[in-house]
Image (cartoon, rainbow, N blue to C red; front, side, top):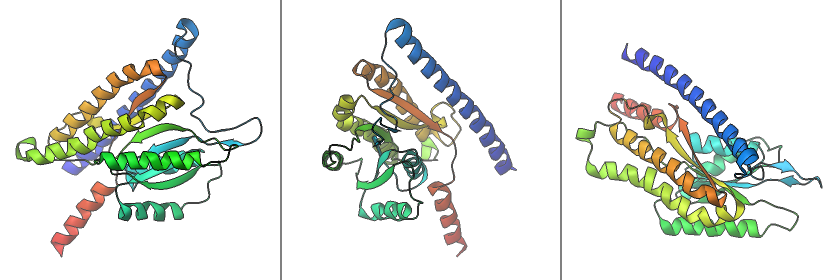
Length: 271
């Protein structure tokens, strides 16, 4: 019975989340064009979208996606590549990178000019972030003159979900999830900000419905996502004068790593 109630609750929150997302999107586009037309605000960005040039060449702007081994990160990478983007899908080490390469190898050929390039970036290491940025810049700089793939976007996705009562959760675990899902977001944005400023691009931080719906047993995760949401909304206004966008994407439940790990633990106990 509790499982059925949770499933009904999930369906309701998903529907409300989608409605809020479409409303937010409509308000964003309407306000952007209104400000530009009436108040001479920032021109709506179109250079961040893949297209065919007048000369018939494919314009495939680049996007970085962190935590692209599986789940939302991998799905986002595949979706963007299918839309024509050049995607740098990152993982924290070589073993994780192999998983991305294996997943990419099983994909059908991209028909819109998009591509996926696996790269190593441990978001908890400033050196690793800097090394990945240098690698991406060198790859794009080596393109021939007729190829134009500017880096116009960064998707901050790397992280994990914690379902645990706050009273029984060690301080070290709370700090750990904040390091990965909050401070790492800041580190990645700061590292890529100079090149995104040059290209008038945007950042997308992966949030969660937990940022505004606060069920019991989710206190650490809800606190984290609320922090990400507040930071994104405020930082977006700071970056707007530079022509840089920053927004939040709020996801609901999804069946990937969390579910597979739970099933693996149950199987181990039965064995």
